[in-house]
Length: 160
Image 1 (cartoon, rainbow, N blue to C red):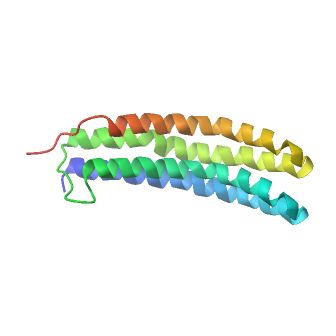
Image 2 (cartoon, rainbow, N blue to C red):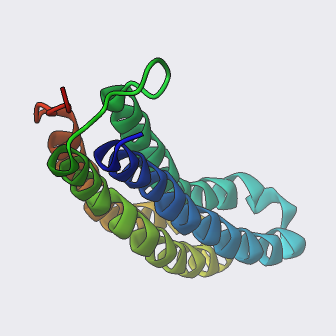
Image 3 (cartoon, rainbow, N blue to C red):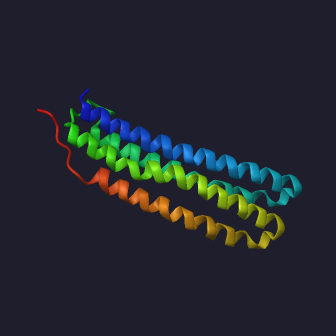
């Protein structure tokens, strides 16, 4: 395996790993809050479940970019012998969703927890909580787009 190939695979691992950690932390935080709300009123389970699921999207975005990077490197066949520059390009392309996915998943959970508190008191307002949570999601989607364009579009150079 060349250094470039290693760097590209490292980028894929960071995209999936860090964005997945952000989602796991976020879904866990929101799940703890949901447990408290549902313990008081089991009828609010479905509203809380929707709020809990929203911080989980960053992990999906990171996994998508990781798959694109791995397909680009052909890790499911005979991996390409990438130049260091090509490997760094893919690694750099994976970083936006890795970093933003980690951070936005946690902050999205904080908004979700607050939304659950609002839903506990005023269940009819859960739609407003969703809108507020989705505002944080916007930045994860932007990072997904940047990573997608940076990983998918450039041609890679291989070592002959």
